[in-house]
Image (cartoon, rainbow, N blue to C red; front, side):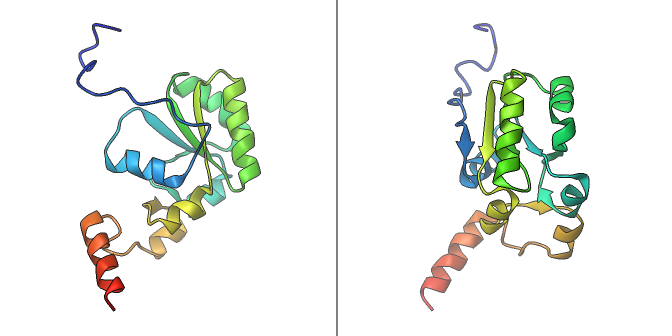
Length: 149
């Protein structure tokens, strides 16, 4: 791996934690970090209604098969489901299948939405994010303005 052109240019990431909060994931997305995957293990209907932007629909009963056929075992994977129990079960299934870097996204979609993370899906498209949700500078300015009221 010493002949890899990006070695020394892009600092290597520390291993992901077994559990991550949504701020960690949002930070990685905002910085455009490569080489991680977000898996939504809820059923298709729930996924179609709303999910984290960019998350792959991977119902829990198809999880190991789908992941094994499409993802590298060393890839960083953030997983979340409808409940914390489903999230934990999915992470354990992936780890048992040999995936090395699996992190449970604590709070799932609800926590993601609470911090203004981008979402997509049928219901999500009917409740669009505020225009400033993607713009950190205007969000900070709004925060400062609100503090002064």
